[in-house]
Structures are given as C-alpha cells and as structure tokens.
Image (cartoon, rainbow, N blue to C red; front, side, top):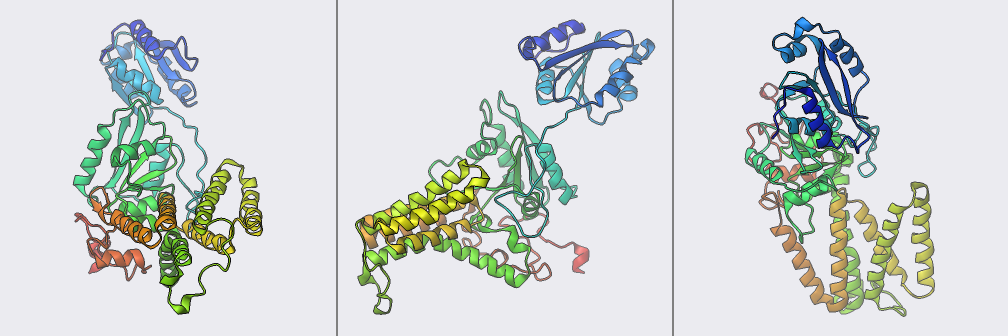
Length: 488
C-alpha cells in the first residue's frame, strides 16, 4: 500500500500511472492554487457533479495563512460545505475511490488527501417491473443504481434497526454489494454467515451481478430449485425484511435477492395481498392449484391415454379417439419444446412484435399441426393448460424449474408409463422434501409443521386477524408484528 507523498507532483504522477490516464480519455486532473499551494483534483469524467464548481471556487479563495497549521482539517471545517467528504492517507485507496466515482483532492505538502463524494449517476427512471405487476399499489421498481434502490427501501422502512452494510466484491470490478436486514428481527447467525460468504468471494468481477452472488452463496450446481427470490419491487423487499429475511442489492442490477426463500415464498404474489381477505385467499389457493396443474396435468393425461386400463369405467372417455402418425408421448415432448421455442423467441423480438409472434405460434402452428396429423387436439389443449398454469407462478425461477420437472416426467411416462410416473413423482417429492434454503427446509412451514406460519401463506388474512407472530422459523428478538402499546 503506497502512502501519500508530501510532494503533490509525485502523487499526481502515481495516480496517473495507476489509472492509465495517458490511455483513458475520461481520467482527468484539474490543478489550481489553494492558499498559494498547488492542488490537484483527480476524477473520472462523467461522474462529477456541476455543483463541485462552486466548491472549487471556494477553495481558490482560501488565503495562505489559513493553511499554516492543520491545512486539511481547516479545509474540511471551513471551506468544504459538502455532506460527503472524508480523508485517506493511501494512494492505492485513493485510486480505488476515483474508479468508484468520488473525486480526490491533493494539496502540496500534505500527506492526506480529501475524498469528495460528488458523484452523479446515470440511471433509468423507476417503473413498475414487467414480471411483478399489480393492479393496485406503487408503480416504482428498482433501477440499476444501488444507492437509489436502498433509498426506495428506506422510504418504506424508517426504522433505525434497518441495517444497510456494503462490501466491495470483485478484484477488478469492485462492485458495491449492499446487505440489508432488520437488526432485531433477522437471524444474527445467518447474517454473519452471509457476510462471511460474501467476503470470501474472490473473482475478477460480477458479470452477471446478483446472479453471480447467488452462485457463490448457494453453491448448488445440480439442484434446480431456486434458493433465493428475485424481486424488482421495493415494497416486496420491505415486506420480506419485516418477516426477518435478508436482502442483497448489487450495484448495476435492478433486482434484489431475498433469502432464505422457500417454496411458499416463490409462489406468493403482491396482487394477493392487495385484495380483500376472501378474494385474496381465492387467488392464493388458485396460484397453488395452478402450480400443481402445470406440473402434473399433462403428465397424468398422457399416462391415462397410454394406459387406459388404469382408469375406472366412469373415466374411460379420457384419451384421444385417434392417436395419429406420431406416438402420443413424442407429441407431448415436441409440444413442450415448441412452447419453449415460442417463449424464447418472444424475448428476442421487440415488444410490438411479441403479440404477433404469440398468435403465430399458438394459433397457426397449433392449428396446422393438428390438421396435418402431427398432434391430436388433446395434446394442444393439455399442454396449453399446463403452460398457462406455469405463467401463473409468481417466481419466474420456480416456474422454469416446474417446467423442467414436467418435461422430465413426460419423458419418463413416455418411456416407462406408470413406473416412470411413480419414480419421477417420488424423485420430485424427495427433491422438495430434502432441499434447504440456507438451512431452512424448502417446504417450511409444512416441514417442520408450523400452523400459524402456514395459515399466513395459504390464506389472505386481514391485518386485524393476522397472527401476531412473524412467520419466521428462527426466533427473532422482536417476534411480534404489533408494538406492545397496541396490544394493551
């Protein structure tokens, strides 16, 4: 670590070499006089605010006698009317600060530099996320700037116990990673474990931002179940923080990670809580039903069609009258791939063409496929119902996992019929039962059973009827939703 020299020219030369100012057009140095001493401001063009011109004017008006003793402290006390200033005695630290956006002020004869955080940020305007829309409620969503995202959460939780810690990750990118939690609600052991895991991350950069952080935190390569929940909504983030969850926000990403995240966390939707208790409960139960329908309905119909002897006489009408030229199991596999092809293609085309693409894929291709005998109509119907049920799942990552598990079940039923269905179903149940999210059972509050928590996940309860205890498997210091004054 290089300490700051007394000679300002040595400091400026070191920083210019360290930052490759001769090659990078946006690394700038502005030299001027402060009390007859040479001073230099080193910064990245594009990060600096116009208001810093006012600060420079004040510095140029400093008199020589004002810098006779404790020059840096006097400048901080009298000449820098700015709210984000600090000092550093290390040139390598100063270079890191400059790359992050703040400006470094060096004064000849001083072995301490002033850090002025006068950054300005380019960011998209907050808007409602496409994947988490709600008919009612706020229309703001996270943006690519971490500080703005933390601000949106702070706006909803004006609690002194809301802790917002930041760490730098990436030896080259040095991305800011913010860890948010409510100090007297979140599990302290889990908080410390997450901190240690983030500190141990050694990688050049975070090319996939929060996804890279997730990979290091979970460490899972084969288990497809999502162990964290992604959200772009600050109100959803605030609600999870109040339940004792931990939030991770990575700079340059418009999404936040919520952890731990169980199956019921993944299928929750803000829309359910914006409705009255009865319709809200209906939506919650319907969403859970849609998850089961998406996974099992096409598979069960295929099994019944392949082995009609399994059905009672009252259900002997299930199954196609004519199979066609292609085996029924292959039809379902092709249809499943076709739906994914259309979905993938819709991501690559402009939004104005996505509707046309959906019409072509769903109507024209499906209609012609049945007319030429490639598919029977039932294949189209049941795969369409499964796809619609999949779209009803709130967590996008869980929806993709359900789709993958359904595809595997289709292959097993096509090859082994009933035995394949039983083996696949048992394997899927075992996957859910034995998976954990940061030490918590993926099926909590069913395993281990907690009725009060399960009730809050399944039924939309009025805040007046809601259980006082937070739905948290851990034992937080403040386990009650209401203040003591409200309970008296």
